Amino acid sequence: MAKRNVTVTMKADYEYEAVNPQGNKVQIDMYDPEKKQHQSPMDLVLSAVASCASVDAVLMMKKKRKTVEDFKVETEGDRNDGVPAFYKSIHMKFILTSADATEEEFAKVVKLSVDKYCSVSASLSADITYSSEVVKP
Image 1: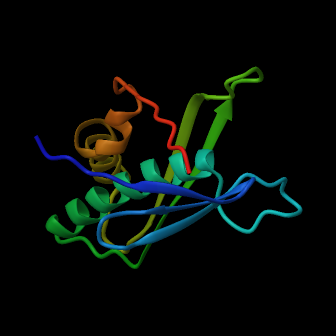
Image 2: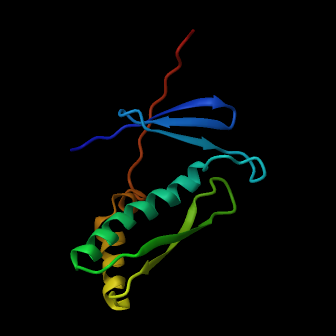
C-alpha cells in the first residue's frame, strides 16, 4: 500500500500552507472573495478532481494518436447549505480542442478517466480517520 502525506501549517487565522515531503507548497486561505488570494480547501477539492481526471484523459487521447491543441475542465460544485457545507454534487465539463477527435471517443475517454482511473474521484468516498495531540510549549 502506497502512502502519501502532506503537512498543513497555520500561517494566520485564515491562512495555511500545505507542504509535501518533496517541499512543494500550496498556499490556502479561507477569506471572503474580496480578500481572497489563494484557493480554499473546497476549491482545492475541485482542482484536485479536475486535474486528476485531466491527466488520464489527455494521455488517452494522445495514445489514440489524436491531436490535443488545447484542453480544460470547467468544474462546479454544488454545496450543502448547512454545516458542513460539503459538495452534494460536482460537475466537470471537459473541453478538448482537437482537429481529429470525435465527440464519442472523447466522451468514452472522459468516462474512463473519471470513473476508473482518477484516484481523487475514488477518494471522495474514502474512510477518513483522525487523531489529535496537544503539545505543551
